[in-house]
Image (cartoon, rainbow, N blue to C red; front, side, top):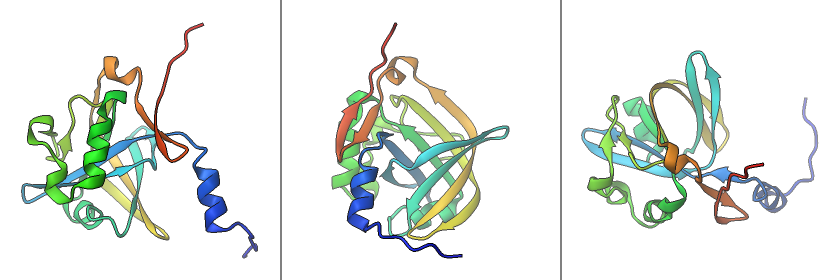
Length: 168
């Protein structure tokens, strides 16, 4: 069954810009060479087993590396880590990684100890999502940085923003 739509790509992008999303560095490693990308399409799937979904554009340089290596980490950037996101956006390949900031997780995927949250994952399944692959990852380790998690870096209205917790 096909339903006709008159939603243009421009209208859809404009509408999606209203969704505030956490900025994550999705990282992997193959033969000792790190690869990664910035993603906002990340969410939890299940608690038992602990799993996450990551949507990765099929044209991203790290896409095929994740599929081959079968490992990845999701690093939710803290509010003060905008420079990490900018470096990932401007540099290519392994140049995105400042070695002193990253540590290999249990799987071997690069994890950012200063991130608000970091999940080390193995690939359980991959589903077609048109221009993206929907990657299901089983979480084999999780690091929560309580101080940094108070205010994570967000992407909202096509720009960086910070989350803020209100207390009643």
